[in-house]
Image (cartoon, rainbow, N blue to C red):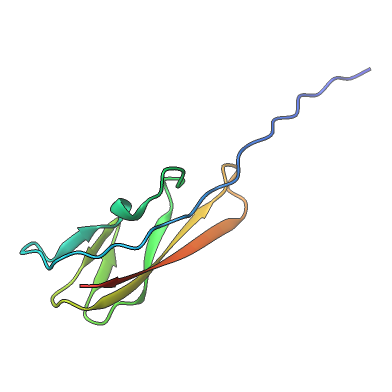
Length: 91
């Protein structure tokens, strides 16, 4: 008789929260500030609607105040499947 182990892993959590900020002289926002308590790190941010802004790694870089929409996608612990969330900010 063969015995095999079964490991049950948690699902990925791509929850990000809304954030309203004042414009910063640096012109950037660290997008990990949007994470909830259980958000799975290691995912990818991308720009959905950013006007003159761009996403680079975990940062949104902007030149003017405005509304920016980004998404965060992360695979589950096994690397299979994705979750997504969208953030809107009025700067």
